[in-house]
Image 1: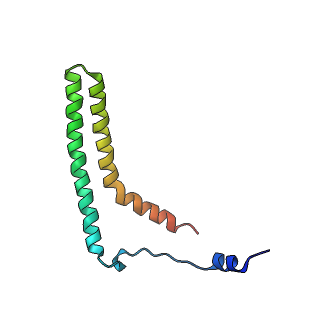
Image 2: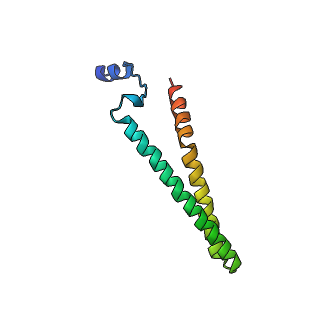
Image 3: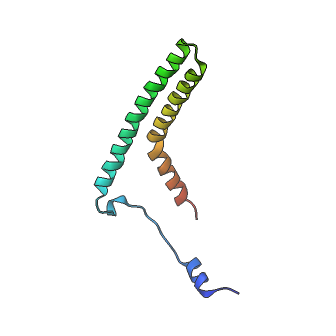
Amino acid sequence: MAHPILDALLSAAISLKPDPTLIPGNSTGQKLVDGLAGLLLTFAAGNFVVGVSQWIGGNSHRNPGTADAGKKRAGLSLAGVAAIGAGATILNWALQLGTTVK
């Protein structure tokens, strides 16, 4: 036995068209996101330099634990930079993928 309210909800046509220009203060939000991305890239670059220094220091002092920690820090910094750089592309891909679902 079908429920009339549930049937009405399931048959309703819903459309979604994301348009950030309709949001008041959009340019401020965009500037904040861009500034945050720049700040994160700066932190990642600094962390990369520290990681490489730690790696070199650990190797030169024959300390494998420190060298491994430096390798990990440098690698994670590179992965973070890649994620920040590819973030918009990944989100746009996911949005396009979502709009193809029917």
